Length: 299
Image (tube, helix red, strand yellow):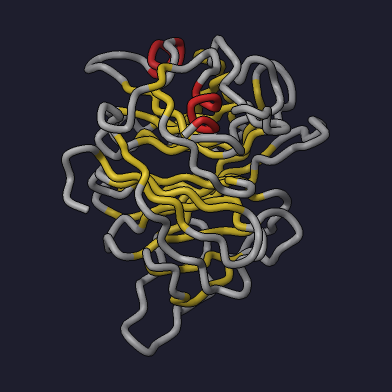
């Protein structure tokens, strides 16, 4: 309890007691059983089945989507007809009544990439019991983009499916900066990600301080558009949004700090499709699945 209290004694976030928090940390699920998931960098809930999760690996791994049960069970992998330069986040959404996944090839540790890419693929058909995923899959469309103010390393990408927008949050800038792209550009030209806001204060790093603990490593948006969540190596932070409010305004306020996830190197976060659960996974083989349940929901 002392360690937790000290970890909460940080600036830049609104810390709530567990009983007041909008999401309460539960016992972890998992661990992930897919042997190919050695460096998980993105997580998304299936848009069509509540008991399934999609994951991707970081750079240097084959271009593939990995399917897991919410209990961590391995449900197979499917290759993607694309190149994994530096895949850093994954999002799920529904567009025109069809389920999709967005793969963010947006990592840029050295800040030198002239352009990055977002691959939007139809969600692969979920396999029946005892059968394998069918593949490979191809992108329905790819968004090539650059930032209006120069290259950025970005590991946090999310889709606002109601607005038809993509949000990107920079990792290594101080403060983290928020950018926006259209989900369905009218042309195949290189798009320009426009800055729409920033997180004005550094996110907490815990006590003792976690190295690089303030840098965002993943982001997701609740399907109803009511909130975004950002995860760092230290914790998870909720950015509620009021009706009619812009994301720039929502991110300008101090976030709600949830109980620390206690993961070794958290790299991915996802809302469940009904918005009642938050899940976080870490890099490294057989990561547990940290789980937060919306207050008032059944366990």
